[in-house]
Length: 303
Image 1 (tube, rainbow, N blue to C red):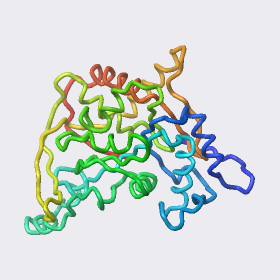
Image 2: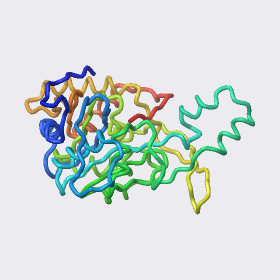
Image 3: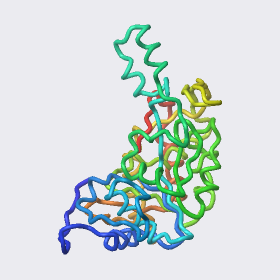
Image 4: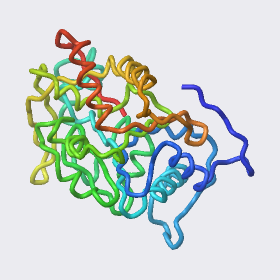
């Protein structure tokens, strides 16, 4: 994406200007938004701190300001959701395979023993970006318990969404994506801020909606009873290698509709999109059915 800098009084984006950007993307009071964001693409931001907040809240002033702007638009009835995935505790992730490449068996055993077990209360997300971490650490945030593909949420629906995540389901109907898709609400949106469709986690739900999707085994370490414990489970094989092409096809189809379903704009200097989640997932399921005739061999989870 190509950022487009805008002239602003004082040279920085503010909570108010960012809030207006979110509204132009379709966010309204009471909306539920699933956000993927690259804060560095937003540009200069004037720090904002909630009145009487003291030292609470995100340590990152840019993240805090973007978060305050979005929550201001959402209001008390709205909900904010972000992916807080972790791959550092898995022995079946690409990151693990890259890390142990060239190690001896003894070194692999030592590295495996040192891998941090997942703890939903303390484990930081990995590769999800500063905004996701700001949401995870914000007062009042809830986090789902999946050891690989957890989500963090703030707002009216946060507790219910975080509670809906089966430990054997990464990103399918029994993850928080399931109820977001099932509510069929035009107010449930995906926001892509400074990032492309290749990181759109909701597209993974469409992989579960295909007939007989390929599956594979996953293994990771979690904390149970105060001790590390390795677990293995079987789930749908995840692949995002064609999500950029899927997003291009979705936008092309959108230009032919009388009522557009993709709102394009900017958040700060970052190119951004807002799209209705259930429409995007429905389209993705159809597109994948026609464009993935054979099971894929690689998989990757991104922010």
